Amino acid sequence: MHDTAERLLTTIRKHDLLRAGDRVAAAVSAGADSVALLLLLDELRAELGIVLSVAHVNHKLRGTESDGDEQFVRELAARLGLECDVAVAPADSATDSPTETAGARRAKPNLEAAARDLRYNFFRELAERGRANKIVTAHTLDDQAETVLLRMFRGTGVRGLAGIRPRLTLSPPVEIIRPLLTFRRAELRNYLRAHNQSWREDSSNNDPSFTRNRVRQRLLPLIAEEFGDAAIEHMAELAEIARAEEDYCSSAQQLTAAESAQPALDAKRLLALPLAIQRRLVRAWLETNAPEASISFALIEEILQLAHSEPGQKLELPGNVGSNVTKDGSSSISPSVPRNVRRARGGIVIEAAAPSSAEPYEYALPVPGAVDLPEIGARFVARIVETASLFEGQASVLLDPAEAGEKLTIRNWRPGDRYWPAHTARERKVKELLADLHATGAKKKLWPVAVDAQGRIVWMRGFAAAEAARPRGAKAVLLSESALDI
Image (cartoon, rainbow, N blue to C red; front, side, top):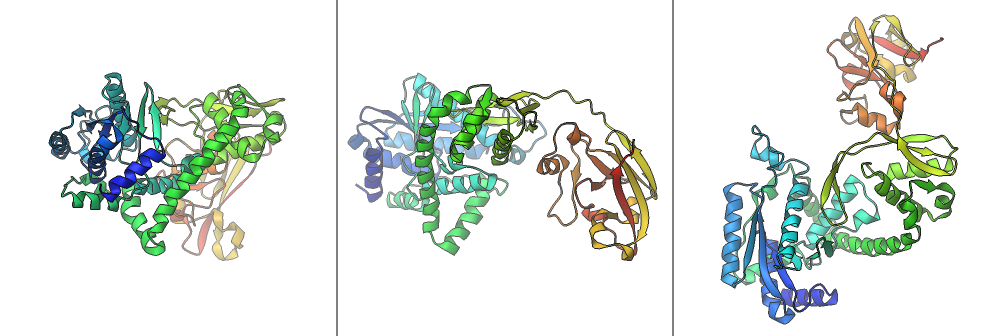
């Protein structure tokens, strides 16, 4: 028995992943990892006492290359004397546009989730037909390290650091098993070479438009070069530690699980819990009562702050339209519903946001000149000044006269507006900038910006003047805002 096969056998038995009599389908894409998995299971099937077959999904994302993968898997299964189940399931068929290129379709952010859903549905179908009660996939230690890094970059907690779990149960009952999470890709390729077994390379793995590919091709090699190859393994070990602690804390959280299902969260009981459990309870409460919410560490902290505040305080609940992964591994689309989290007398509640009476406004501001905005109770004044006569604190509200022109427009921001404040790295959506300021409700909707004759935002309340509109000569437009005396 090959050393790699012997180590896999030890892993399977140690974690009780497969048992004698299991009907096991190896998910084989034609790539090196999954081909190695199939050969290893074939080498061990008599020892394990399992009934082995092959499962392949052709997502049709790479045209004839995808069809070539399918043919390769069929031929490999036939050579090993194994039955092969194939599903042809185009991952982008539901969202294709006739004018889109194949590359544009592959780059869609939800494509990976759509493909996963199709595979999981295929696995369920195999279970319903009695073809398999366990599906084995070829996720490796390298995949685990990539996942941990990606989740760290996107923002995560202990649950996210837990990474890829060794087993996942789908409904109807079928288990997805990942026995290679402690194996490196290089080891699996060495195993294939020792058996003179070829595999197929997926050309999309070289596409830098996929974030995971950039992590795989650029970041992990850099980490290994700078900190040693063991650093990759340490990230996978971190996932294992986080997974054990997540499972323990989840068990401890069962004491408060009934509260997460209640429409109101008891503030006094919440604040009496340890901080770690407070955060978990708030997350569980949000997941139960506001599944459309975009839950983040910042939102959880704001709700805990709300629990300490006086009754009547509230914050806007950020909505999230997108794919939400459910407990069985599938995903669903949730609508964005405008709602608030409010500190009530006895606790915290989620309620529908009152319809805003805020109306759009737009006023011309001559340069020089002044204009009153009763909608926000403010007066704006534009003056031509000598830059040498100003003190440093006024520099953030200075505009270049050539950019400001003879007239500015003061209006509330609109969906789709983007702004690049001076001294920042890049242009961002105004919506995102307002989220950083925690602006909510009518105040958020009425937030003022100044627009030049070309429709570009050159100033936004709370931020420096636009990078492109900064003064370059001896004169500048000084834009100031004051309270309107009504």
